[in-house]
Length: 343
Ligand code: GTR
Image (cartoon, rainbow, N blue to C red; front, side, top):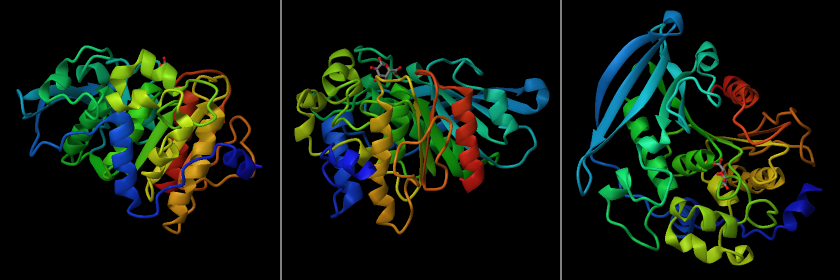
């Protein structure tokens, strides 16, 4: 059943020659734009440091700065760590709001599960608009292949990763980047490029995220490049209504996580993000894990029922009831998967 469903999408196969470089350059050139090289060094300054949640955690505001071809750039992020002095695995979460916790971010529960939490508010990097501000002003602009805002937010997450690697409270080998919706797209593109992340979570990321473009009856390339052209490089717009001709599809973004861990979560009523295509994308990407002798998605021959997570393989997946939201239910599943695989 899954085989015929997948065949109906007519996907380009994953490249066999030099797969990682081939897929990275395709997606950079055609979708997200080419990111600049990492800065030679970053500087981190702790702006505040206080007890949180009655003292069981510690919350620090850390400002990261680095040189760019224009002016030095800096941004803050918040680091919440259990206060027991031990090294903990972490989530690097890119968020729609600066507040901790907030409706998408059950911070106390995350701490209670033994995970540290690095929180980046996305508009501290550049606005979610066509305005070329913040980090966007720091690098030369290329209309066709220059990075869009997803690329900029992803780049900032990698700078947070630079800092996390230096912190004794963090287990630097177990850092998972996570985000919801447009920020789920961002988390995937970040981890695709930056192999220091041991795992990525995409929650309801949909079009230009986890979901295949071919056969997508929710958001199409035309919709997204019309409403949000600035998330992408200029070249992406050329694929509007031409999905069938694209030399790539979103399973390649997922495949770039191999042989590391990936988790994709969908919401049943989120037709715009197209759960079936998010799931099928995981099925198609599994070839990349197979090529490494590993199991990608471990699934029966059909889409799972609500709240019946697929946690066995290197790709975790669940679908839950209701709509577009980063729910506590999703977080609990993501943490269950991480606990199970110690990733
Ligand atoms: C929608 C957009 C989606 C998704 C969503 C979100 O308007 O069409 O691709 O990213 O926003 O970020 O909530």
